[in-house]
Length: 396
Image (cartoon, rainbow, N blue to C red; front, side, top):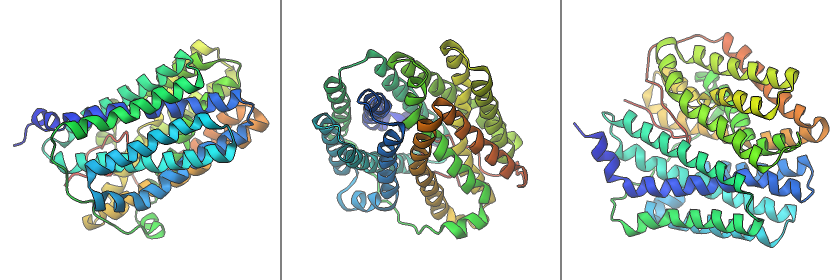
């Protein structure tokens, strides 16, 4: 039986690399709204720029695996981190919305490719007997690193310094894999994506992934503007986002246990209902910033939705040969909806200020709750997969 400690230790360089990657990405993705707001760009313009990131990520889910298969994981990691870093530095040349949109598109493609690379690596190395432990460690690295990146926003770096720090972190991520000897995984498998067919099989999983993409990536791309429109600054933005991430990290363990005992449908409704109540508090009570930090912690219940969508899909499948196709379809829907959420949020926040952000979340959560109520609940099947980076992994 393989040892989880030995498995994790054998991938030390990969975990070090991904920690630098997540810190650098969190810093730049959390700062974009701040920088564009300070430059005088409208809320819809900010949403448009952020949407391009997810358009690139969407393309990455379709085509990035071909590049990785052709040149290998380590070389691909070096290529994508180099392009990622170059694009971050290029942000300082101009604040033109078209130029930034192009850069964000490339960043989205590279980031998705890097996630696909990392997660396929873990998928091969983490055997079934130790998979939950390895994924738990991966989850801890993801949330800890992303939280550090978000807290760095509070230092209020000058824009050129911020771009340089973020680019350096991304470049540092490529060093461990190139300096430490590590065995590469096999080539990525290629599967077809048929959304209509998959929807007929696992409708709740598809709808949950769509709502998760809109809400989670809407949070990462537009929550900084949500805080700024209330008259607060970069420090408050970083604290607010960190509280959501901390709440999300801690909720994974409780939600995972509830999901395995009570079923995916029940847990999806529970997560959506908690977040719905939190958003009602934002709408009707207009809390101060300290109370918003407290509420943000419980808003972290949104973060398990994508993992629950994957687990639900796995539970409903009778033909396990369809796992890869279904997993990629769920991931595709997640990024497709992520593309539209910054645009919708930007439009709503331009016309209704921060209340537009709240109402968008209330509508999406209410829709998910009502849709899930009419679906069957299943308490047996595969165990809950914690999935911070959208990893398509299923147990046998």
